[in-house]
Amino acid sequence: MAESQARIETLNKNNFETWKLQKEAVLIKNDRFKYLSEVAPPPEPKEAYNSWKIEDSKTKADLILCIQPSELKLVKNCLTAKDMWEKLERTYQSKGPARKANLLKRLLQLKMETGSDVRDHIRKFFDFIDKLQDLDIVIDEDLTSVMLLYSLPANFETFRVAIESRDELPKLDTLRIKIIDEWKSRSDQKNPKMMEPMQRSSKINSEINVSKLKRNRKKPLMTEKGILRSRIDQEK
Image (cartoon, rainbow, N blue to C red; front, side, top):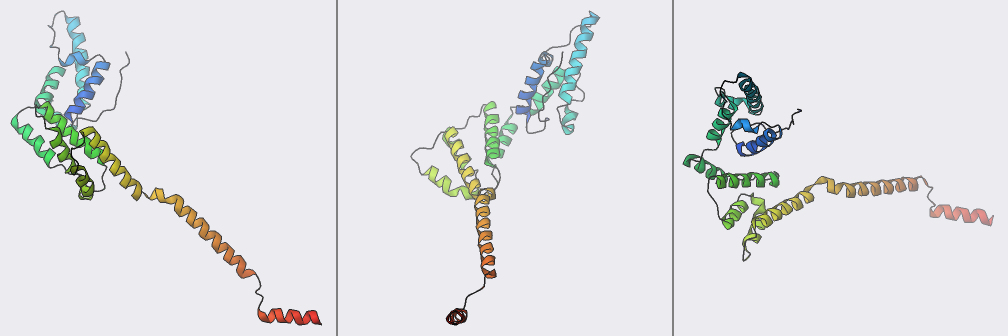
C-alpha cells in the first residue's frame, strides 16, 4: 500500500501540540496509529509477532524522522512506538505547576515587534491560550482581549485607546479581525508598490514636458528686429 507523505514541522521544544495533531493524522492515514497504543503481542505465533514487529519499527522510524536531532535523546532507548509516544507526551504535555507557570509567563511577556507580521503574532498569542486551556487554565475573554491589545507595539496606541474607550470590548474573533485590518491598512499606506503607478505617471509626464521643451528650443525665435526686417523687405 502506498503511504501518504506529508511535510510537517519537525518536533522541537515549543510545538508539540501542533506536531502531535499533524503526526496523528499522518499515522491514521497510513494505518499505523494503532501502534501508538498497542502493546507487543506474545512471541508466539512467531509469524504474527514478526509482522507486528516490522510495522512497529516502521512507525518508530516515522516518528524519529519527524523529530529534531536535539530532541532525539529523549527517545533513543524506547523499544516500541508506544514507548516513544508516551515518553514524548510525558515530556512535552506535563500538567505540573512548572509548565503552567512557564506558559503564563511567556504569554504575559509576549510582545509584537514593530514592523513584524501581526498575523504571526496573533497565532502565537492564541497558541499560548490554547495550551493553557489544555492545562485547565481558562482566561476570561475580556482579560484575554486586554492582554492581546497590550501585546501590540507602541504604534498601535491610538487603536488600543479607541477600542478601550467603548462601552464593551469586542468579541475576541471580532477584535482579531479589527487588529489585522488595522495592520493591513497601515501596511498598504507604507507599501511602495502602491505608489508605483503614480510615480510612473509622473515620470511619463515629466519626460513629455522635457521633450516638448527640447523641440521648442530647436525652433528659430522671431525677434522684433526680425519682424522689422521682414516688413522692410516686403515694402521693397
